[in-house]
Length: 129
Image (tube, rainbow, N blue to C red; front, side, top):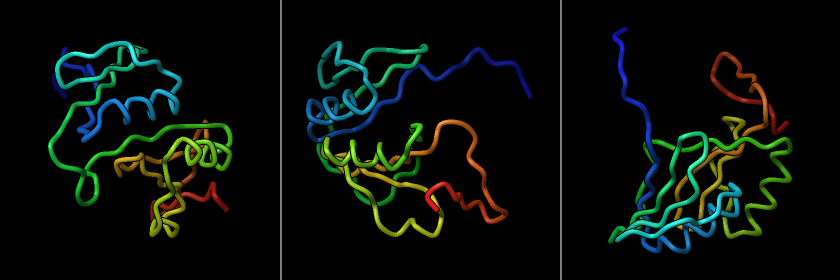
């Protein structure tokens, strides 16, 4: 392994409506919207990581190649809260044992329990059992 000074500065999410998506994620993460620059809407930077929403001309199509995992002490309660904010649970992931959600524009993310998540030999979680 080589030494590198590179680090992730920010996560940028393409959005057809960056204001709406930033408002959703602001509530989910408890990070207020702190700025707007050109096509970007920014949430407060925490632990060195920025989160921005960039206006894109087309909606998400197909499965995300990368997604975010958020942790919560009670994933089922967090699911209900997120659904109240406009997110939804995605079907078809039950066999993997993960709580897979989508934001209002269809971007996928998982809600996992705070702390370690045990996986079986097939990579399936069992915290929803």
